[in-house]
Structure formats: C-alpha cells, structure tokens
Length: 115
Length: 115
Image (cartoon, rainbow over all chains, first blue to last red; front, side, top):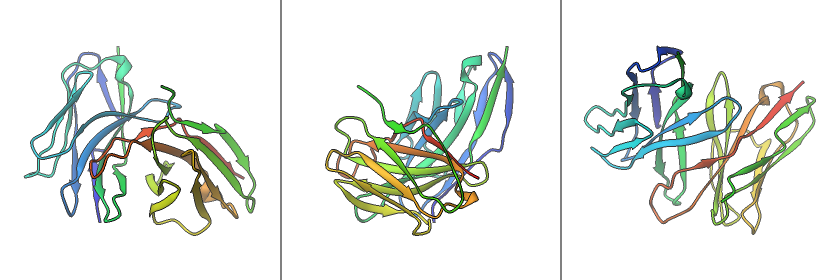
C-alpha cells in the first residue's frame, strides 16, 4: 500500500537557519503530495501541495518539489523564524475507484526554532 | 468563511462507554473525512463521506462508525470504548471537484481520553 517516510525529529534550529525536512513516498499510481503543519493545540493546516511530477509547491517561504524519479518531496525554507516552530507532516493522496481521496501521512517532524 | 468546527474539544469517557463526536464542515464543502491521531500510530484515516454516503473506510474495527447528514455535517461514533481509543480525532472537509485532489481543511480536533 501507499506509505510516506519522513525524517525523524525533533529538529532544533537557530533563527535564520536553513531548513530541510526529507520526505519520500511509495505509491502505486501518481499521487498528489502535500505538506501540512500543526501548531500546538490545533488541527492541521495545508502548507503547500504539488499534483504532478516536477511541480513546485510554495507558501510562506517554504518550498517543495515533486520528484518522481526519486519519489521525494523534501520541504525547504531558507531562513526559519521562531514562529515556524510546529510539527510538519508530509502526506500523499491517491484516488480510489469510487472517486474518494484519503491522505496517507508521514509520522511528522517536530521543528523547534530558537532565537 | 468559518472553518471546520468540531465539538466537543475535550471528552473524558470510561472503558465500555460509547461516544459521539460532531463535525461541521466549511460551507459548500460536501466531503468530510475523519482521522485519528495518536503518538504511536500518527495520523490514520478512519472514513470519508460524500453526500451522505460513506465512500471509503480505513482499517478500523466496526466499533468505529460515522454518518453524514443532508447539510454535510458529520458525526462519528465509537462504541465499547477501549483505552487505546484515547486520541485526537480530526475532521476535515474538502470541496469535491471531480477527480482533482482537493486539499483537506482540518478542524482543531476532539481530544478523547478513555479511562
């Protein structure tokens, strides 16, 4: 079945450092790929998405490129801020024959940014 | 536009009891999904409803059930609660647009504790 593997955390960075969170996936077809972020006490928020190979998703300074050849969707940000401290989830979505979609999530990576 | 609303935010139940959680999707969204989040298993898909029909179900026992009403609001029910059902239950809605993978919009969740 489908699966998502992302780097284990926690990750601790100083403010303005460069961030990379690795994500690789296994899927039978051509999934859409997502990064979601979860702040303490809240649900998940969509950070960015890519729906086909070589697409680049971007939002709030975060970027990720859909790499079909390496089945990867690594999240990057050039300069992190304290407000970026959260848990980040990589996810994929594949449709079923009934037109239904479900997300398969990675385990999440907790990021802490210190001033 | 109001976001996804889940009630209640917190619940404490005893083993063997049953519980009902409620979710109101974003206005105009017709698909509602439920996910269970635990520290050990991460985020796992429970089921998805569209136009009052369950289209997809995850690998959970029959004690977990749900339904969707004509106004797209959804409820999930867990009967004969077990300690392992303690989790954050997240509801998400999406705007179904044919075969495209519409992003999910999550609520803040219901924290269920089973004692």
